[in-house]
Length: 293
Image (cartoon, rainbow, N blue to C red):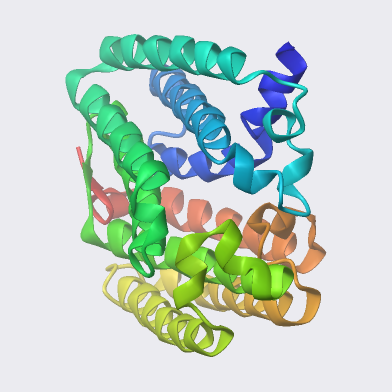
């Protein structure tokens, strides 16, 4: 049963919570062991909350998932995990997460609770509405980034918010496009909001989102008071364009975690990360760019 619980909590999706670590990196505290303990705790808390939401969502969507070509194999939909077991463990994890988050600080507890409430409202209601669904998902990513900053008591820059939001929006649009292609005429039966989307509309939204993301990231590097940050532009752009290529040519947009299995994307992410850290920590006065302690 524990194995089925873990599978239902979707650990492959927990990479989304890595956004929490942006705070400790851009506040120039990577060598602060005490803050690392706090941030890792925040990461685990959000993994527990995300996993609990997945458990509850699978219980709510059990009938739809049984008709889905892939989701029908999930433990709850297939019957290998009972609904009451899923609800029981989800409740335990939620209580544990809230108690743990409160021990970090009140601000982190508040953002954790707000994140959970937003995601639950999404699962129960907002995911049915076109555009609102992808905006809610993107907001969830921003809340993760803010949570990572609040856990170590630093403030968030608008640059972090807008770039995180646009990147998450791009990933969400790619996933919706993949679902339309995969499910075809049956799409609306599996996700109500898909009835309002079309590949043409999604392609236009993706173009707008990419354009805004590229401009926002470029402006950040231009006004960062450190010309070396512009060295990261080619790697950031390559990652964006590579993902766009994968959506259209390799049909992996429905599973963003597959990006970490694509050699081109993985190399781009690693190089971008190394260059950003090098630039930030070679010139320590950049600490005020994203966060103010």
